[in-house]
Length: 584
Image 1: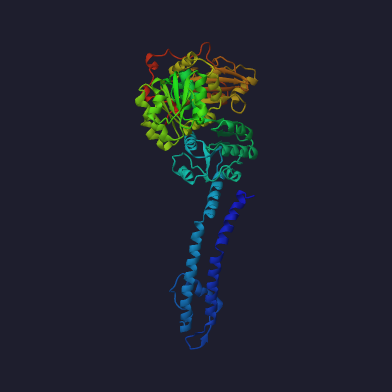
Image 2: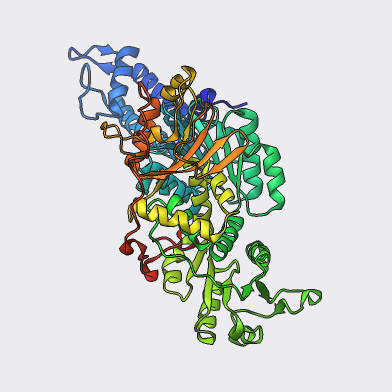
C-alpha cells in the first residue's frame, strides 16, 4: 500500500530512474576525457616531457565543460593535447545538454508532476491545525459551498477529478488558502491524502454529482474514520437506501428540496419567506410572499426532476400534464401528452391557454429556454418555472420570461450550508410544515417586527457542560434557569436581545416557538434566530461565569406593535426566493 510517507520516496526513485541514462552518458564522457588527458604526453617549459596526473586531468575537465577559457595548465598544451581538449569540449557540452534536457523532460512527466502535486497537498493538509471540511467535488455545488464556508471563516480541503475545476480553487476569492487535490474521490488513497484520517477533519461533503461515487465516498469515510459525519447529495431516490447503508449521515436530494419548496410556496407562502430568511446568506423577513398558483400545471420532460415535482403537486390536488416527445404509446392519456414542448403548436394542443403554470424541466438548458419563450406569447398570465443545469447560462436565464429558475447546484448548496450552520433548522422546518398559513403568517409578522430589514441568522445552542458551562453549573446547584435568561443583554439593563427562539428539542419532544419562561434542562437543544449581536450575547451568557438574572415579571423586551410601513413587502420585482431562483 502506498502511504503518504513513502510517496515521497517513490518520487525520488522515479527521478533517479529516469535520469539513469543521462547520468551514465555524462559520467562516461567525463571519464574518457580525464583518461585521455592522463595518456597524452605534454611538454614542460624546459623541454622535458610530462604527463598530467588524474587530479589535474579531473580538475581541468571539470571546468572545461562549464567555464571554457581558464587557460592551459600547468603548462601550455601540445598539439595532441589541444586536439583532445577540443574533442572533450564538444563531448562534455553535448553530455550536459542531454542531461539537462532529460531533467526538464522528467519535470514535465505527468506521473512525476502528480506525485509532486499530491505531496504538496498532503503537506498543506498536515499544516492545518483547526477543524476543516473535506469537499469532494468542486462543480456548482462545491464551489458555492466553499465560498460561503470561507466567508464564515471555516477551513476546507477540496478534491476533484477535473483539473480545470481544481485550478479554479486558486482563482476563486476564498478567505483562506485551500489545498486542492486533483484526484478521484472514489479512490480511498485520494481521500486519505486529502485528510480523511486527520483528527481535524470535521466532516466530509460528498458533492460530486454522481450518486455511485458519493456512495463510495460515504462508505470509505465510514470505514476509515467513523467519527466524522458525512453529508452527501443524491439525485435518484433508488440511491438513498444504499447511501444511508454506506454511512451517510445526511442525504440531500436537490429535486426533493425544490419540489418541497414549491409545495410550501403554494400551501404556506409565509413559511417560504421564513425559510429564505433563515437559510439565505443575506436573507431578511421583508421579502414578498411567493405567489404560485393552484390550478393546472404543464410539466415538460419526464426525468427525475419533473416526476418528483409532479408527486408534490398532486399531493396538493393540483392537476398536472406531462409533455414529452419520448412518452410510450401506452403511457399517453389525459395527463401525459406526446409531443415536443419547444413547439408552440404542441403546447397549444396540450392546453396551455387554460394552464396556470408551466415547468420547463428537461435536462437541456437550450430546450428549457425555448419552452419558456414559446409559452409566454400563448398565455400572458402563465407562471413559468425553468430548470437550469449549467451555471454559465445564468445571464441567459435571467433575460428569459421564466419567473422561477431552478439551478441544481444552488439548491443543493443551500441545503448543505443549512445542515452545517444550523442542524436543527431541518427539524424546525419539518414541524413548521404541519402548521397552517395563519401560524406561519403570525411568525413572519413577529420576525418583521423584531428584525425589520436586517439580515436574519439562525444558530443552535446545546445545553451541555462543554457548550453551556454557566447554565449547567446553575442547574446542578438546583437553580431554575429560564430561556429568557440566555437573552439578557450584558449591559445590566435586563433588556432582552432581539432574537426569537424557534425550537426547543428535549429528548424526543419538539416544541415550536417555546415560551421565554420555559425552564431549561441539561441536554436541551435550542434553535434561535436573530441578528449576529444577539447570537454573540447568547453564547456569552451560556459560557460566562454565571447566568444573568432574568427580568422580574414581564420581559423588558416585547415585540413592538407592527408599524404599518413594516407591513410593506419589497417590490415583487426586487424579491427573490433564494435557491429557487438563480443567484446574481
